[in-house]
Every structure is written in C-alpha cells, then in structure tokens.
Image 1 (spheres, helix red, strand yellow):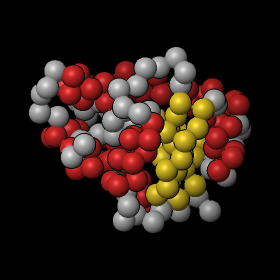
Image 2 (tube, helix red, strand yellow; image 1 turned 120 degrees about the horizontal axis):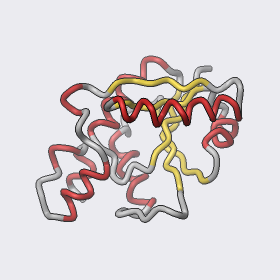
Image 3 (cartoon, rainbow, N blue to C red; image 1 turned 45 degrees about the vertical axis):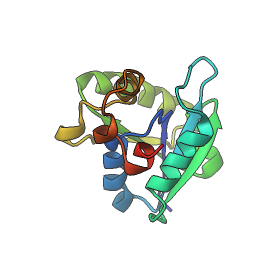
Image 4 (cartoon, one colour; image 1 turned 90 degrees about the vertical axis):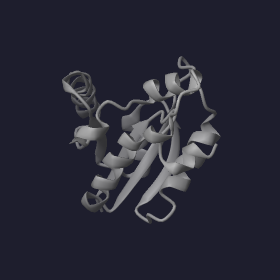
Length: 152
C-alpha cells in the first residue's frame, strides 16, 4: 500500500495545499494530512480549528485522513506506515529548503522517499503566512483558502 504523509502547520490550509493534495490523490492509496505541533511556533488558529477545516475540505475523499503529531516527521511516518512524504514547491527557495529536509529525512529513515509536486502557477504566490497577514489586516482572504476556511 502506498501511503504518503503531507506534513505542515496548515495555519490555515490554503488553495495551494488543496492543489497539491488533489493532484496527489491518484498517486497514493492513502494520504495522511499531518498537522504538526511545534512548541516554538505561535499559531494564529487553534489545532482543532485547523484539523476541522482540513476534514471539511476533504470530507468526500476517502483516501485522505487527517492526523496530528509532534516530533520527527520520520517517526510519524513510521507510526502510520508511510514510505512517502508529500511536499509542495512554490519557488526555487522552497526547493532548496525542502531538499535539505528530504535528505535529512532519508538519512533518518532510509526507506522514506519525498515526493515534490509543483504548485499550479496561479497558486504559487499563496502561503499560509501571507494569508494570515491578509486576515490580520482585515483583507479579502477568501480567494486564497478553501470554502471551509471562508465561513469561519
């Protein structure tokens, strides 16, 4: 069984995330969207809210599950039986950053492959941090997030 973990904070989930996940669904038997907990990070939205948004967004997709984890992503992958990590790339800077993480993960867990998908060109400028800034400044963020986030 091909199981992938798509880790992130999803604070909030964006249309860029949705694009990557939607295009990855045919590639795997199961994708676990893993909402990571980082004690050093201040989140705008509570974990429960982020999980609820993801669950609502993918409620009709049986191959997608949502999980929560802290610590090493490689350890979480082992816990859920995943041999793949799914990551989206928006730009060359993302690639350099993600490449270093992928190489480290591979050293930690030799049977773990990282699969990179390029975000669709119209969505490549969207990031959770930009969306949070738009929300903080009371801008129209609806165009950057799935419907589940828009109604909150």
